[in-house]
Length: 222
Image 1 (cartoon, rainbow, N blue to C red):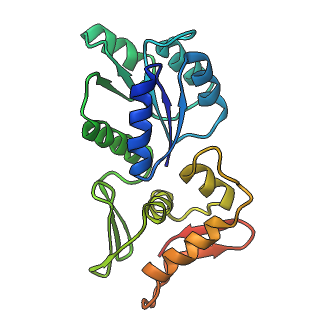
Image 2: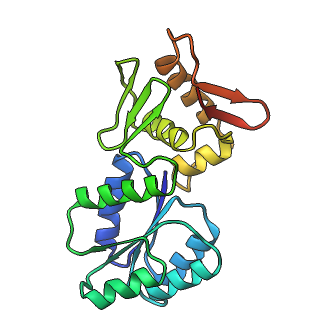
């Protein structure tokens, strides 16, 4: 899943980015409100982590403008402000959740997972597709009771497909949502990873879960 961080404290933003990348997310960062607004309106994201106090354009203004523009991406407000009225203002402006600094990275991750689930058909920390079970909190994957060992990138791709199960996903879309912006979209790396995942979750099972959709890409379904 792709996450946009809009945070002017560069050290904090870079720490969050590093941690999220290690968790398998693709991450973009804007260090001021102007860049954050542009990226929120024009670049695909599954979730936005948005600070309130920002240079040039503040977070509340960004939030109001993207909601007015029809951007429905879940937004987690991240700020040092902790009064009730600050929280009410942020939520009334269109935020989906609110996290006050300082915070534990584990709590940030839990809130991100909750918001991503809320925006999909999945409402628990585990995704089930047939006898395939994906635990998004622990990154454990099982099929038919058997443990499936995946690399971080393989897991990220499988999780995204599971959250969008029964939908045809193009190679470009899959690349955009699991790789950072400097990745070559013309690469066949998605095909390589799909083949690796197929070998791990479909080999030895009569029912195949990963399907090639001619002219469209790939789909995870029973």
